[in-house]
Length: 294
Image 1: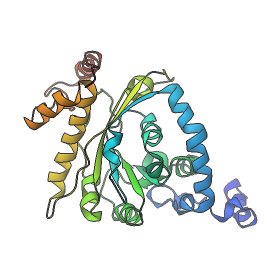
Image 2 (image 1 turned 30 degrees about the vertical axis):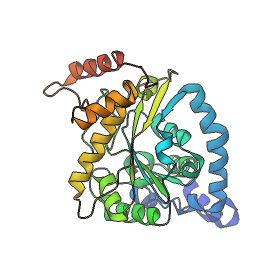
Image 3 (image 1 turned 90 degrees about the horizontal axis):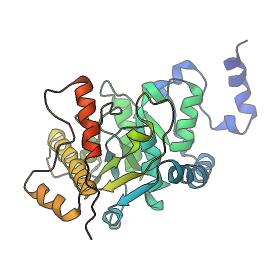
């Protein structure tokens, strides 16, 4: 008899097994049931992990400068947080930076093909970070319906619209998931720009190189009546670029450029690929202006 069969038979006999999903291979990927991670025992464990493990590690490995928390003060009800993605550290950094009322009632949408391909990985992701599986290569009704129902139940959503981590320091065009859910659920979307995590632990890195990070929360975006997903998606991507500009310069200069429609694009130079694009991204980071609006 296989180990998986023995564990499945033993599940009813143990307290943990009562709320963990089946270990069948059919229950992995987008089919993985994360409902157990939103029940009281798992939520209590996750609160302790976030408070006493995740946040202290973030302060040591990626100490953040946080800008724009005042923009969250008037928000009520569920919120979608949408940001750029450069590292596996991004999720922990966002959760550690959020106010308590958002942090402990947040779900994270992440690729089912990566985080839910093995039971041990799926269990850790669901328990520690409250990750739910979404399909990245196609629009999955099951993933969309699950996420929408959780938002309607009052959960905040953290999502990275690029769909995968940046390999060169520039963002990829945003996919429409955050915009679609914002329109469907009628909730505000807060753009976030994260700086520094790629230098600490980017794609292909074999070790962590601790260093400072920056988290900028932009102005909340409210979906307009009859607004199309494509149009709202453009607004979200533009707002993340404006947040990046504010973090790298100052609020006043960034607002002036935003009003003129001149916020620097985060997608990088057109027609440049390969090592030249990576070099350009590194140069952009090296030249950033760290001045702050007084």
